[in-house]
Image (cartoon, rainbow, N blue to C red; front, side, top):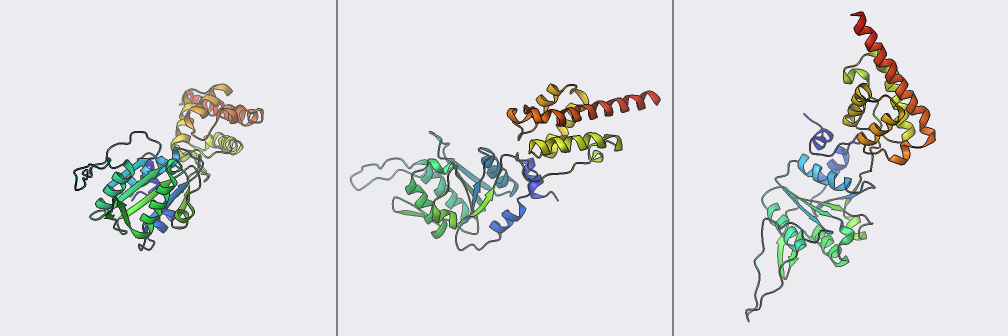
Length: 284
């Protein structure tokens, strides 16, 4: 059975880091209040990718999303009807936050639902207070009407580029999503159909990634390895491949003079491996 990390990779978020423990803490926690995951990190929109991939990996029937920086967010599936007073005067239309949260509450009455509120730093602080009341009291109030959330079904993801309102933070479980994976993985040649003759190349790559301060995911490593075997012949080729394939590699990091030695070691090990393969083919 695929792990949570594997499921999330299939849904668009790949990382060496395993978030199964944090997710289990949230899902198996008490349901007196809404279970809330506060997604922090330096990953910019990588946090959004994490939230949407996690929602899909958990296979919740409903996932609603609202970005507070969008000028014209997508319309929800459920449109609240306009209301009128006794004189026939129509109230202003329901705003996007009220529409989205009300729909999430309604969906949670029957089936598991994920609500993702993104870029909370752009929301009015009064909305932060309302979100805390939703977490604590499990209902959302719109113009005097209440939409109740089922705490056993509704899961709330919050993403902000600035610290959350203190009360929300205390009611949430925090998870860190970095710009790059923190977990180093020791790849072996056999995992990629290679023999012991590739060990020097894998050793050189491990030293290079350590010097770069990054940990490529399996798919990134596999693509770099393919480039080395088919295309990379110079230091500049290797720099271009690393920047093109590994999300955590920056142009500044691979241009540092201190990286020349580790880069050259990878190019040399690649040439030795290709020469070895060529000799073996001729011998056969």
